[in-house]
Length: 126
Image (cartoon, rainbow, N blue to C red; front, side, top):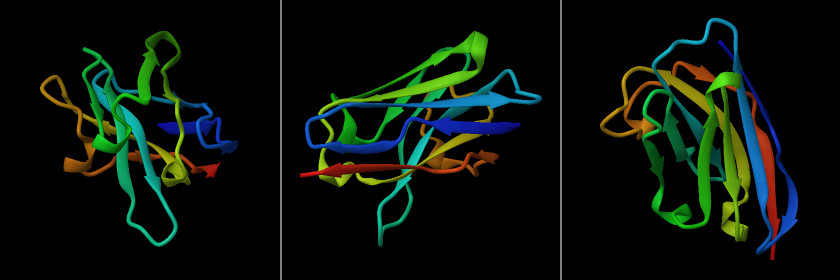
């Protein structure tokens, strides 16, 4: 499975961005897919994820109400709509996928990640 991410950029605080991640290759039926980010000097953290079958989602507390994750199952693509961006959202965003059943919760950080995409830089200026 290959993950192709796109959509990063440089924006001002309060602006919006939409990240996309498309899975290609032998895509499994049941999997969680989403976004992690890493800010300079900080550990990588999970931002948001979605389960391929039920659409169960996960958001880290700092993005709730501002970010929305969605998916296009036919295109094996996951989108992260990021609104009201803050400087603390700055970082490299990585798309990730974990094979499994996440009907009861899609916090992928609890599991080992099976696939990573290349990071895309998101920079939010104040």
